[in-house]
Image 1 (cartoon, rainbow, N blue to C red):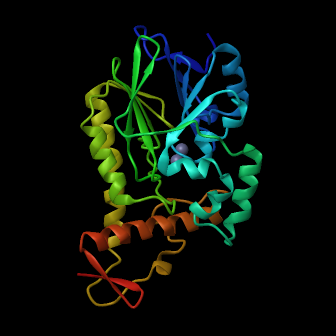
Image 2: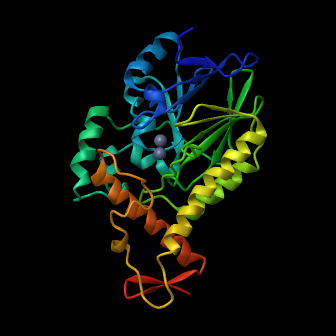
Image 3: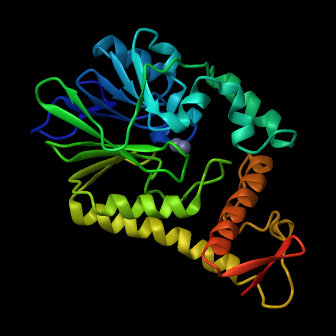
Length: 300
Ligand SMILES: [Zn+2]
Ligand SMILES: [Zn+2]
């Protein structure tokens, strides 16, 4: 057995967990292979080349458009690709990524262009779009249900194999870092999607950046912990607000309110942090916790 391919359990041998390069850390991610259906292609070019020599891959379900889940698409020219309608136009035109990360004309743009080039990202033709709750029949044994879980991106989907209760949660990734810095991210939807998954009966979860999590109770606990990361950020941001003096988005620049420390991608992270803080403001506005005041925000 190849070390990066692991059957999900002794019982379900045709469902394989495919471990991404560098333990699935960005710019790579984990995949799931169910017969000839591969979910996401970001394991790394080297591993995907190996995988396709071992297993036929005729269909690819993409959880969302992000480069760390789609960079291997170009290595599967004969496969049929599926993605939610809301993410389709991006995967068909990767030049739009900069715009959707909100980094056009910023110092982070060059850094990101370089990364996309090194991943050799290309446009992908989509065979058909995925619908929420749709079921895809795979061979005689498996049925993959599509669950639309927007928030991380507008078209983000998770996948549930109904017979085995194995689910691929993609970038509701149950790590310590929750990401919603796209112009198509939405924090209220993100939290609703986490709640939606808590109601689903899942026995084994695989996420884009974390290995297997087994047991319904454990998975629900991890979903709760993941959601509490968002709530802690809410509290941190709200502690800066007052009822009289408006606070501005720029006041939060470089304050490490979301990134504990910035990495070698500092330029990007400072920008992404501000975009995510704006998502919290958008949420606070929508639930009536704050109001706009001279382009800043005050508590209601
Ligand atoms: Zn993502
Ligand atoms: Zn990811």
